[in-house]
Length: 305
Image 1 (cartoon, rainbow, N blue to C red):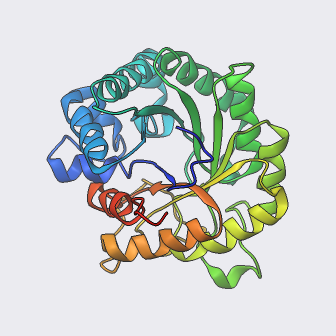
Image 2: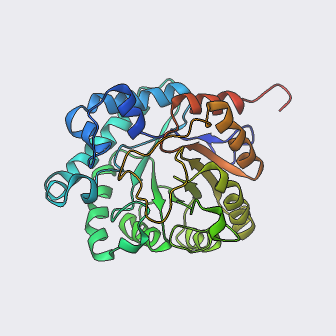
Image 3: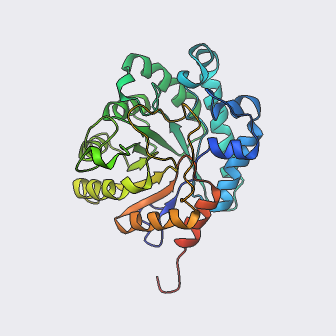
């Protein structure tokens, strides 16, 4: 499965937390998607299997909420590496049982808090990321650092992964308020070009944008493509939240889901991203298997392609 696939983009899975809740898995704040991992891991496997059935080429380990700000510092110290290992095992098993090749992305979250570049603390982040990498490492095909609000978070991930030769995908979350800047910016206020330059310098295979509204993604893809040319793959996986301001924190509360982002409506956005050069497309919070199936069907090669 090549990033240079000319027929269609590589398809990621969608959001995990909302899908767990929809299936009836144990689910509450602050543990979010980590609660099912701890209490009912069979639900996590069901989510992976549903995304594979919908057409995902890459599934993501349920390790995003395996972080002290979700499960607590004491519980992370006692079980963080074990839970990351379990998240990796579950995803690996689902991928290995698929009837076609499916890769596993090891999710590395912003361990000091989602949407909170102001809380980044390198000395706190380093040991957390080391434990996540150690737990996930036996099971994953690539590393996916996601919902990064600032370039320093990308630097910390690169440090934690070290010389590991598996591909590194860096995914940044964008400011949702289009009125805040003339061009798309990270939630830290840094321009997209800074994310692109950081991804290139850190040797990332792909630069993605996630956990922001679909409306802000096209401009980010265009700016990133202009900054890096064709030197790395670009990707998008948007969420279904209303705009989230500076005071918001992803997964800190159960945000409403937009009613207008049907699978067909989401595919319309995805088709525009593909036209701008996105080679990897999936979904984030609130985007479910039905949306991924719409991407699969909409991007299916036809006889004239």
